Image 1 (tube, rainbow, N blue to C red):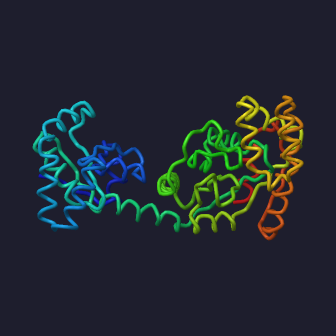
Image 2 (cartoon, helix red, strand yellow):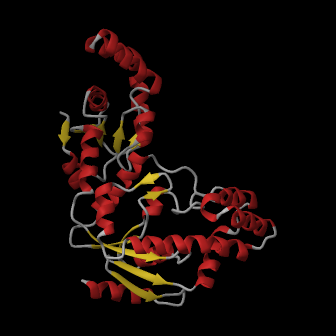
Image 3 (spheres, rainbow, N blue to C red):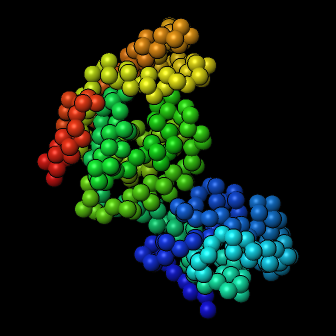
Length: 339
């Protein structure tokens, strides 16, 4: 007998079990449930063939074509599952709980496993994820000018058992023109939303969640509208870090990267820096004068940050002088005083 569960039941009772996503690799890369293992019943090309057959000849012909393509692989699938897990219970899903996951669940049952069929499939999960952005959450925004080491401080807060969501980690981007250096590809927009929804689901409505002050765009990832509006209405603890320390933080973070890459990224913000400042910045990089390079950048970034603050002047903002010598407990005490 094949059991089934809703998406809520999955998170409540079955999230520790292996989760098998039988959609194609392309569908999985576009977006998937966190920790799901992609085990395509049909690869990208085979899925296209079946889709074309469905459009041209109808449902029955498409089903027959699907079995024709995968039937010879059934024995190999069982062998692969034996290598994948020693557990007998496995949760299975496809796009919306249709034929592909039903076939895989049937096959697993015949192979001696106890499959659990996720009703509604990935589509149900996406609805669950999108609903997370509308749930009431208490956010506390950590602000500060470029180079204030906000991400490092968030990590310290998390180590101190505070509720933290690192948006830049979820987006795999540090948020600035130089933010993608050394980090590789960003997730798709859909997967970024999935990552954020998963992070939000770990905290209940009574939790105060620390989040870095971000623009709506983090690299190419866009914060969901409802969630961003909540951020804009949440109080900010603004770190006041002196400019020399911020410059050092930026050099420590980016100075070791290849100069050609730094030059390329600096050229990319010519319109923001101005042509002459861009040229001076590049000359400083080529002369290994990173202090001058960073100071040209900070002239621009500080003005931009100030303009942003002025546009959001009605937000509740608490200023705190901060440096690497401060104890993280000071921030936690300040946050507790706001509750």
